[in-house]
Structures are given as C-alpha cells and as structure tokens.
Image (cartoon, rainbow over all chains, first blue to last red; front, side, top):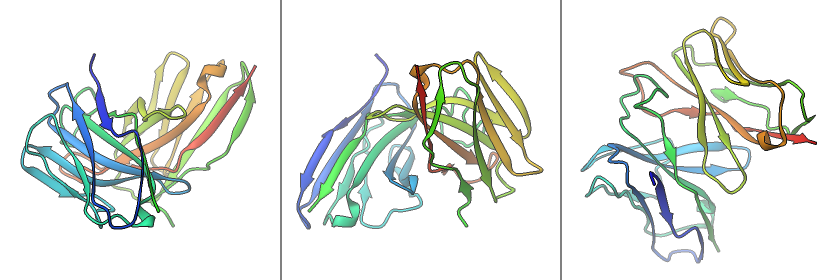
Length: 120
Length: 113
C-alpha cells in the first residue's frame, strides 16, 4: 500500500530534550516536506527536500533541522524543543516538487497521519 | 493581512444541501489553486486543483477560480455526512516560482443527517 508513515504518532516531552520524528514514504517520491498545523494558523511549511541531500527552509524553519540521506526517509529533528513547538506535525511527499502543475498528477502531495507533539 | 484568508467556520448544513466554501487571497502571482480535505485525526488529502481562472468539476465537487477578484470557491452538491471534514485551500505561483504552497486556515464543515 502506497503511504507516508510517521513515528511517533503522539509524543509528550520536556523543554530541551532532543527528539526526532521519523517520516518514511514507499512511493519513490523525490519531494518531501514537513508542516506544522496550529489552530488559527493553518498549515505552515517547515522544511522541504527536492531530493537526496537537497533540503531548504520553508516558512517556519527556526528550531528545526532535517536531513535527507535516503530518498524514502525525511526525519525532523528538534535539538532543543520549546513549548512553542507544541503542535501537530505532518510529513508529505510528492513525485516532484517542481511547482509546475501545482497539484497535478506529479505534484499531488500525500500526507502522513500526523504527529501530535506536546513540549512541557 | 494574511496572504490567504479562509473563514474557519464551523459551517453546519443539513444533508443534501449545496455547500459553498471560499478563500480570498492577496498575491496575484498565485496560479495554481488546490482544495484539500482533512478528516479528524488524519492528514490532508488533495481533493481538487485548478490552474488560473475557471471552473473544474469532479462528481459532486466543483472548484471555481476568479482571479480578477482573487477569490476561489469549492462547491459540494448533495452534501453527505461523510463530507464532514475540514477543507483547506492552498495556492502556489507558477513553474519557477516558490515550491512552498500557501494554505488557508481551513473551514470546518459539518453535514448533519
């Protein structure tokens, strides 16, 4: 089954304790990205990756790191989490991210099920 | 002013009603317009997309773009309780522009039997 998986689905942690949220896709997609979703603010992109070893900042990258060493995996790293990073996080992937068809067959983003993070 | 404005609702309608969901935007560079549906405790899924102005129909769903007014709409005919979800609009500039889509806040729709 084609899918994007995230782990963990739920996480409660404390300020300053480094954590990693994993994301994996089995569709051989080139483009992957991370979003956070907050009430009243909607979905905001944190980082994205056009391909292996190619990453770039989204709208809200502060406090986050990513890496793309393999095509299928795109982990999100919070080196020193703070309470303002409490949010619902989504990983997404698409065949390409050229911004061409913007939602066409090659640009359709498939989202993971989400990770609810609480930082105390 | 946010680049994309979307009323969060909730919008509550009876089964069978025609639903109209809307977004306004300020960036005239946006050319690609998308609607995502997000069920509770799930990730968003792409419902429809359109390029530039015009209408696009897919079953009970119709997406409409009016670039002159910077206004997009999603119409749902014969709404069903299974349509109850949050609907997010998203937009992007054309090829060569930003790879980052801009999302609206989402509108919560409740269709009651």
